[in-house]
Length: 368
Ligand SMILES: [Zn+2]
Image (cartoon, rainbow, N blue to C red; front, side, top):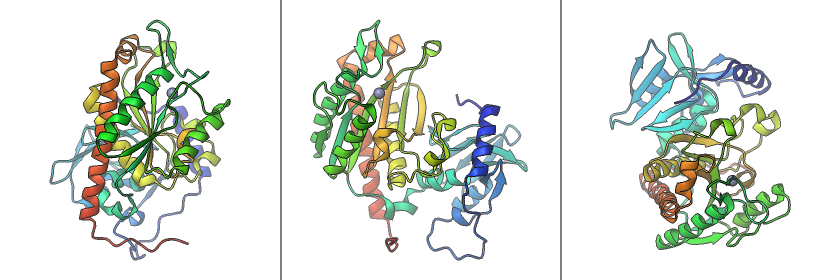
């Protein structure tokens, strides 16, 4: 279940929106230069953020729209039956049954639901109609860097009762995943193949993991982690998948931590590939593990910030939940995690292939 945002959230959002100088909507007379049209759609300024009416989204893509609960829920459906579901005050939406977090909450105005313009441009539209962005998507991922989270004197999260540390489980999954991806005909490199850390301090350690992928000209980066929460939420279980937050968007975990300089961080130039990757990997993880859907999210994690290639960070399950930690402690479950990630990678690669074949739009001239 998605939680409605707290009033504190709204205050932070309003203040942040007021500070962010997102360019105003272009007048409708401006001729479109590319088929992707949300830049030109009518916008409405709500809580100091530009919002787009879901009715315009429906009209643009030729979707049928059904408003339920007095306009508090909107279900949009295309001819193939693919559904987008938005709910008032929620910071997530569902695409074809998968939970995807937004940068800003959905709001109600004038009897309709509104989605922030940045979310429409950077997330909703590209995920729903990736073919419009085919020229911005990379080729088949041939060289993949796997990053087993933590290591050495940084154990990561830990479940003392079950006697399992994150660093051990991440390395085991990485080694299993390496074999599966190699069986797919891909080349795989590991940021670490033993119980070590890459630098004494965390910032450098994370930077070196990204540097390793960049120096090897990786096509894809996968960071493997396990989750944990504080004592008061030990019931929490499930899978979360993260990619780098696109520029000017709020991260999912805690928007108040995103100071303005962070929101302006330029991302890693792979926004479209990242969300495509995150969505496909997250879906595969849910299908494979059958765990609770904690959502596909964005964060400016140290290990993702400086990557040159598309990258994903997977929090497969919760070590803080004893039942889930018991599963993580079994080789069968870790193999299942590795298989789910491998399935996600092949789904991402297959989708890229399909888009490349379908793409009839020539690439736009490169920006200087
Ligand atoms: Zn971790």
